[in-house]
Image 1 (cartoon, helix red, strand yellow):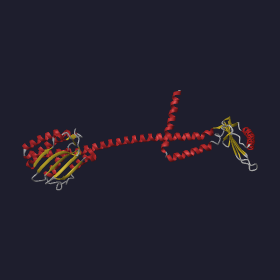
Image 2 (image 1 turned 135 degrees about the horizontal axis):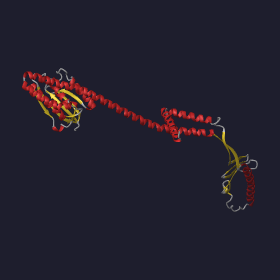
Image 3 (image 1 turned 120 degrees about the vertical axis):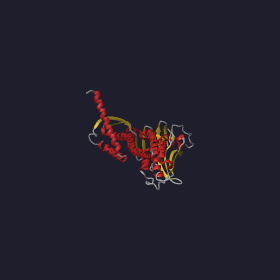
Image 4 (image 1 turned 90 degrees about the horizontal axis):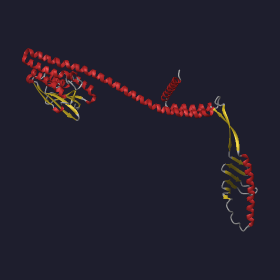
Length: 408
């Protein structure tokens, strides 16, 4: 096995451990993470004093200069790198007052007065000047003695430093906790992003499945429309062949024209309003032959709306429903009108008749044809389309299909 392959295996193993540890960090709460971090710091502190972490791994001698602080009943001396400070306490037996003496690079100061400055002119009283000189001489001797004693205590001192592995355990534990916190924050964002991507993919697959189901349902509903329309028309032609062959021939020609226009539309998932009118017009001509003066039909649709999208075979279903349940049951027949207009950004196609009205019809507005239309609108547009059924004036029914307006 080559070194390169071994290195790759080691790298893959480290990556696998990292992913598992990161996943575990994401799986625990921040409260638990903080608690575990505290326990880790406590364990590191305890283990640092136990074998083998307490064994010396190295020793070294360190020279250091430490400040000296000498405290005596009558004087307090501090010596460090900045100089010497002597606080002489008041002596009630001799009557000597308290004094603060500082010796540094600036010189000697007594009670804040710099002795290196030129002395003031002597006072007329020479006795007082002699006393001051005597006191200064005594203080100087005391300072010399005290500083000499203090300096004997300060200076280069040696100490042995023991280096143990346990000395680094708390630091390592703290660093490990900080790195774990960073990994937890970074990996949490990555996991959330992956979860969102998976959720989006799941929603897309669900929507695709819903569309497939909707298309299958729509195909089944449309399959109910096709034979229903065709069988009714053929039955009418069969009846006319027996009673009036010329009229039957005319109806047959219209049926051929209708099928030529309607058969492609039946197989399409989308159509236009103009394409639907190519189906409705020959259908009405067929019914005029059968009903003669009992049917008066009018189509009032602007040519500008012919290119508007409209569900296939839906207009023909509305016309057929109006004639079958509204006009045919009425002895004197009536009028049928097809209109279309755009209202508030939606295309509204209305089929109105002056028949018996949906209240007196056998289905009362809840027949299979209307139910199929509602179901197809729901599958195609969701809540953006609707079928409206209302009473017509002075009699009959108004059926309107409202869909989003879109011109192709």
